[in-house]
Length: 347
Image (cartoon, rainbow, N blue to C red; front, side):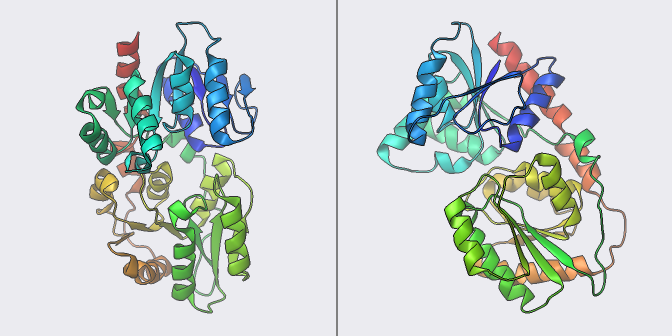
């Protein structure tokens, strides 16, 4: 198995662990993004323009043996490379936004990538339903399960501090800084919710986001309360920041059930998130915790953040359930069992 993906994505290591649990090692990566040295063999294929790079990668992959199996992380970029390679491939769809109506050429490309894949994985029922509506035939080879959390890794994270009356309360934006994740809308709402309170800090990670958008926001919210992290963080560092935060905010235009939301559940953070159809499974689980505030319309965002801050400032009572809920519903072991069945079918 060979991975096609962005080395900076946390998803790649999760998938490598799933393969390990299936008794298969993935040591080779091809990418159009900067390499990080986390795979034994890494190959960079980059030309002018991201789309041309994906095409060039696909053509280079044609030199691989005919029986090579690829795993493309993302359908609209690396999926195109996999399709152009002429090799068999698994396509993993991470964002259901690619399944929404787009321009004619883009939509036809995504349709072709999915149609030619040997198998497709998605992490939400909503994403699978969209694929089935587009093509019942493609839907038959689409497998829905969440990749889950590696609780052995998350268990290594220890909260390094706790807030209290008069101490700093940390609010973290969970997603990459990008217009699709509505970072500006979140920052406007947070600024309204915290007013001029100096004991609040807002953590804004760039992640794999839009640097121009990020820098525009840093200039707009030039205030000591807003901490802009202008570099990609490794997964352990990112989880540590989440664990050390008190309120986590997630407000994308569209999304599958993100692993960061599962991590927030595991760490028992107070969460503000919109109620997307693709979150249905997660929603039914987290409603048992009492620490998740759902935004049902955009004009509720500020009030929900205000409520979440008030909740985070109260002494916590009772037994927290996050870790048990993750183990029961969203473990990586469960995902590996389901994925192993797919691998067996592809033999």
